[in-house]
Length: 86
Image (tube, rainbow, N blue to C red; front, top):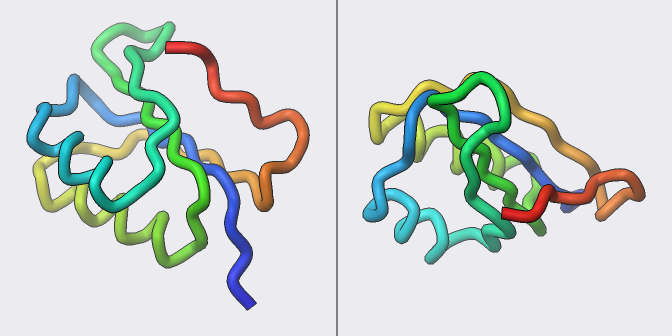
């Protein structure tokens, strides 16, 4: 049984437009925004992903040379997971 949910990834630095285009062609990206603190980080919020999709997304980022600093997942659109506007 695959459980889908939402994922928020924080990466070091900005993310290149070409990488974002590739991610957006494969995943439902809700938002891409600079992190509030500390500066120099980017937060990607993706919806409708299961465990294998989160892994694929992280591998795409790693293979593109990005450091994934943090990850948060919530199953099935659970209450309390509201992406920040951005």
